[in-house]
Image (cartoon, rainbow, N blue to C red; front, side):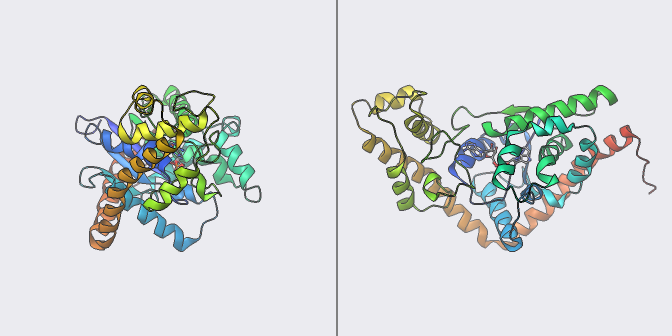
Length: 334
Ligand code: TYM
């Protein structure tokens, strides 16, 4: 609790171009929860190092991501929006938690398996211990709730396991966090292979809608999206292509699947794809405009970065000191 409010933590990697999946699965929910909780939203730049990055590009993407958080509607006066690498408590706690995490647990992580298959020439130790840094992110702020997309649930589960293990030894040190999944959009799938999630790292640009895509590109990608053979707009597991488009339309308009089915009764995929494309364009247009505007105000962004790193350091140090004491590290002489 901070000032009587429960705490929320979440983060995104500044790797690749953000997709509609990142927005509908995470960022949009962050904005809807911001008033209710004391919020920490991090640009998790340290996590990005698990895959080789171009240094200049990473710096630029990280700043753009931070700008996007603000553009999406997160007020940096009320929400702590900061770079993970500016708060050293993340890596300090991660080391301690490494010593309370088993190799067997980390070996079971599907993201580790996927990423090591994809980057077979660079299966580094950071990729393996990635979930422990993520656990440190969350536990450092004693977060009650963590809004994420479905693909991150396994990492949330290991975070809870590590926290419970630590608490069982040392008493109630960590708050046990809960995942928060939005009603719609928790798993947006690829537009080309709807059994795969929409991903920043997909090599086929037609598979993903990027948040900065212009209206023509968005409409074209939806026109080319893979659908099913039934020819009607109905939500069915056997129709992953059309169900995914319905999820996207629902998340953008707030309509339920039943409402969407009714709206498009007797209409074909062409009409529906057109409507989905337009709903996405309408959702992204204001976001893109605000990104442009905010990006121009360098002094404002710099002050957000500076002030919020101080705020995050303050809260994270409280937990870190407590943990260091519990495990028996000597206190600093001041
Ligand atoms: P990342 O950067 O891959 O994704 C950011 C957020 O977007 C969600 N997401 C999706 N949601 C729905 N459909 C999709 N296709 C889709 N793709 C991505 C993700 O679930 C995530 O919520 N490890 C995390 C970053 C992280 C983090 C944390 C998150 C680091 N520390 C602490 C929460 C708390 C990641 O790589 O997310």
